[in-house]
Length: 336
Image (cartoon, rainbow, N blue to C red; front, side, top):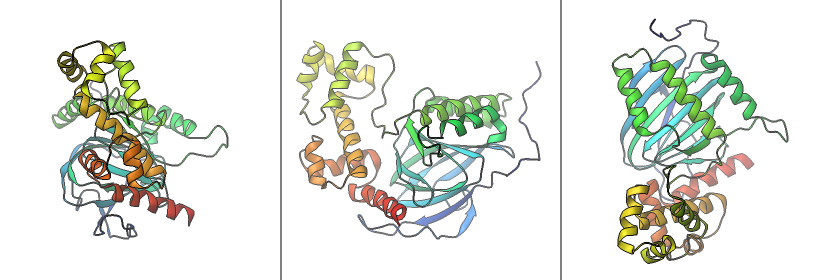
């Protein structure tokens, strides 16, 4: 069987040419971000996340970025026309927006974001450890996918092309799948390119079709119906105290048995799941409304603003004031 080789055509209409603009965020919590006017450099030369190039041709790039960020850091990618980018966030949190006045999207751990050129893409890296897989490709490399993207991004009502960052929690492609592809790329396996594009197809479709919600509660797809019903109830009413006994009574188990079963099947404990649901709702309210933090904390079941701050910092590496400042800057630039 002949080996599958990457297409190395030299006639790419516009090379990837992804440039990175880096700017350390020196502001205090709750203040407005500075303008993105830092010097231009090649992707990865001065980024706080070290990069490992796994696969690279004139039209495709697959790389891994890891490292610790000590303070919120702003970077920018210049994405040329007909180029596409998937950001697979395995660890850490980042805010991403298309253009200088677009709406920020929150990419939590175990989520993927998709954006197309032509546009500068701003990325705000939160404090903490990061692990990120980056997929970049020119539309010519996957013509059918490119046409589908252009069609799906066009609003049915207005006919205008939808501008923004699409994001969703990991669904069909998981961190372990990306790790295996990275290992295959390192040893030069012939099937890297087709697997690259199979993951690209999955990631793009899931992002574009998603509701663009913050995903802090990834769930297996084969949970028992009774647990699915409980999970839906918690998501509908995160403000409820939800002691362990209430969850156990709902599914008809003893608290001890329920605690073990829930953690085994879901991947984390019931109390952590409730906390994640509350944090998801709080992030949506912080980024979409001007409600006081204290009111949001009460509505989401935290009880105190301090509890909300600690939870958002734990899961996103940001403070509520920092999260709201980033989104407020996007709205201000858009209206200006």
